[in-house]
Length: 272
Image (cartoon, rainbow, N blue to C red; front, side, top):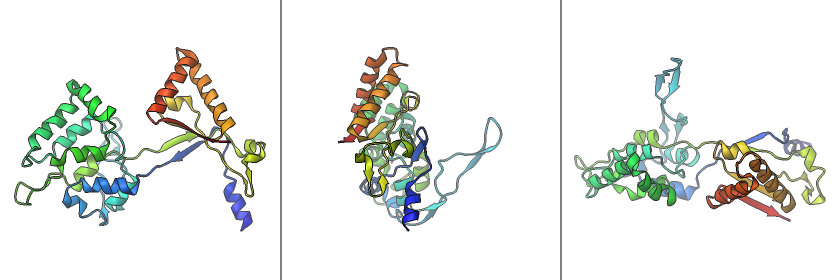
């Protein structure tokens, strides 16, 4: 009914509240990742699986804590890779070391690939890691593609089977972290805006991010969406707020936002 639609649009939020979004991976990226996994794992991509979390005693309070990520208990691998595993993230150095264990030594370059992964994971290889992972923005899909000894199964004879199983895969993959956004406007504020914000249903919600702590302490991304005047005003507020805490003032704040923009972590989508 119209009344129900109106109620669904009047969400109980105020400026300063946090909106949490859990992103997912696009289908084409999931398919590409599956294609660079061992065939023994590819073949069960759409088969329902059951995941059991292993438990250990916490060293601090001796309570049980999970060793693994909060994967669902029942799912398909394709579903998990779509909604749970952060295959778009950049692997850490310790991840490269963990992956080196699964390089099949019967692969023609198996030993070399294993040694390269170990070298990239070491402190002495920090520059190599920076060039290979950080600068080139190689994610988990790229990593598995480059180090094909991990998926190599040869002819299937003894010694030619893939060393990595689905259990191993789920142990090393990171989980998708929720994204937290600060709501910088509320319905009570927006109904006082110009008619450009109004529609037959009432008003359009504009969501933007303006949390300095999110930027400086959590290395968070900032996305501003809305009218051009609002977007410009929010950017100015962010610059002013950052400038109040950075040693170089607003000059450093602008440099920081430009740096984030180049990294794809700051963007503005505005309309007139």
